[in-house]
Length: 394
Image (tube, rainbow, N blue to C red; front, side, top):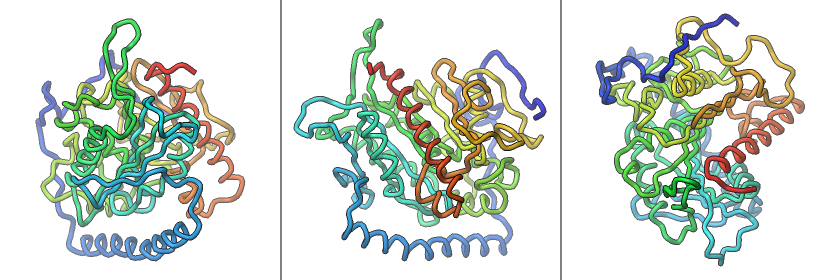
């Protein structure tokens, strides 16, 4: 693959931001032609109508046959009573114990219709597995969906429920601990989002009320996050995901006209390092078109330089790999520098980490098994990194 990067000694934000993070220009969301709008709205509501009976069937099935991956508690807060959180305690944890737990908030996405569909239950299997294997409290957040709710409403939803949970003294979160050496206190709290949820995870940590919170997350992780809504779907270069007109549909549905698409609270790709949590993680499947913007942001944050957008750059290789394991020797797939971690998972597409997405794709048995094995490896890698960040032994 041709070299399409430039190297810098620092990690400046994109040129459109001034030194204070303010906007030098506005890249406003403008209306498409009327026929396109009709087509987009039709596709969104078709997707919603098709999902309704499937969700209804899932509700009934889970009522009669509760899955082993279900949360320990489902809890609502007064600020958003219609957006309950799903709470997963590690299976080894004694609920009567006074001991606190490192905590990871997760925010779901949707492979089929980002910002418009999806439910925290989609992540139950992942959340349960991560809580059990890493002895972490996992709390799944929800948000209102487009086109009924558009930016910034979903981010405000996440902010409200996140702050409510952080202030809930009944939850045994490890909100403060002393760092070795410097005696500074910080919390073992992180936030991770998948797809559209990756956007919200990064955006909410830039909001003033969250930044002022004593239990401000020390870690944010974008797992295939849609971080750059300013670049039209048709210009995104990759091997799969929300590229082309498909991406335009979901972007149109979630962003109001006139909105500055390079506002970091809408497109975290344009945010400043100082506005984000101390530690930043980026994970993506090699075949996901959204991998590019996660890779590019991770590179910028560690001073590796911007990736040239207009040369058809893709993440990873042009050719198919050997399909086995993670690749830690190739910087395109893996680097961990300072407080930034980048992990590109070879030969998998968007949603590889979710059983439902793998089943919906109709993939062959061997491909599904490979995605399952790599999901396990990534969860182990992420767990080890969080333990180092949070200074947890074992």
